[in-house]
Length: 294
Image (tube, rainbow, N blue to C red; front, top):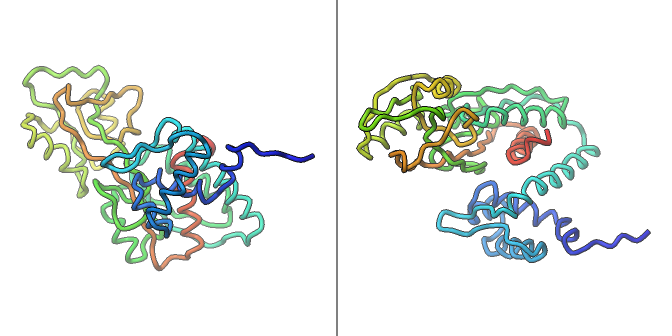
């Protein structure tokens, strides 16, 4: 039987185009994506025009901040990641299984299920590798990676660091959905009391905006901050994915200033085993957009 592919099926078999699409979606910037792929910016632009033309749709919105996915791009992304994941897993069937150990650091401002899915995906594809994982404040991770204390780390900050951009996530002022503010009363603030960019972020922005506040809760744990917010005790900035059904996002209409995005970067150690590091990075990149499949 002869199988005839339609136009869409043919374009989606082009792994290079899908890889370029996923890379741009990961970092939200064409120039950064081109550097990661070892191609010129114009070459990557041509690839995206070819993919969009082949699918007869627009996948990205181009703006001053970079490139954001359109609804069609959001629909394609998990499918593209699934295709690339299947290709990698198929290739692994014919390669020598990895062995050894890999040390990886996760930020505790990560989506709470993110680490679980990454570790599960990695264990499924590389059962012979022992994983040593930590989660917490990422301020020490760059030093740990440089000095060989960690092989791979996801680092969080208001800007991308020296490594592979993972994602830039919206940050919101979060509070319990039933919390009501009294006019001119100080904002009850929860502070992440540790040496990282999250600590001074809320007070600095509220001071600059002239918004009065008082410290109602301090903790060095994101989990405890979220608990304080769910209890209706305070307000704090959180990554948007940390919002639960009990929490709401506050905006300028509520008197709160804009927040920077939470930028996450994957850093790898030059001293680590390249095969193990690449395998862990693949798991992180695959799971970030399509965790439900794992």
